[in-house]
Amino acid sequence: MKCPYCQKEMRLGYIQCRDGINWTPKKQLIAAFSYLGRGKISLQNGASIITKSAVYAYNCDDCKKIIISYNDEEECI
Image 1 (cartoon, rainbow, N blue to C red):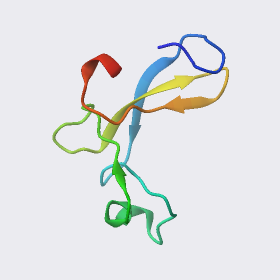
Image 2 (cartoon, rainbow, N blue to C red; image 1 turned 180 degrees about the horizontal axis):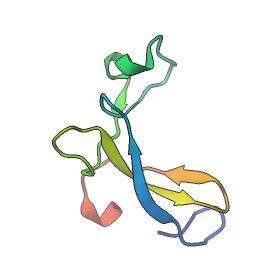
Image 3 (spheres, one colour; image 1 turned 135 degrees about the vertical axis):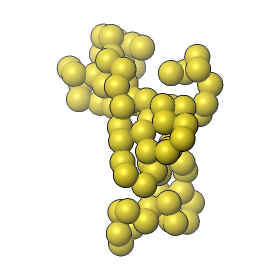
Image 4 (cartoon, helix red, strand yellow; image 1 turned 90 degrees about the vertical axis):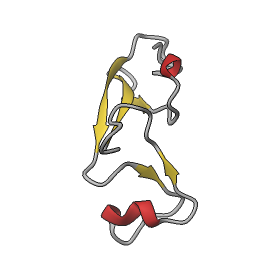
């Protein structure tokens, strides 16, 4: 995948967490319970189907940006 900021090639890797990976619009009191947050978006994208504790993520070493696609479609991974 090309970095949308610098157009260099990004490296595919993983972001992992013990209890599932979620984005929430507000900071949660206890990060381990972010899956309970209102308006949360589960970031699962097929990297860890059983535990849902890892997602594929692209890293740009030059820009220091990470991109996560939160769907199960393989063409986005």
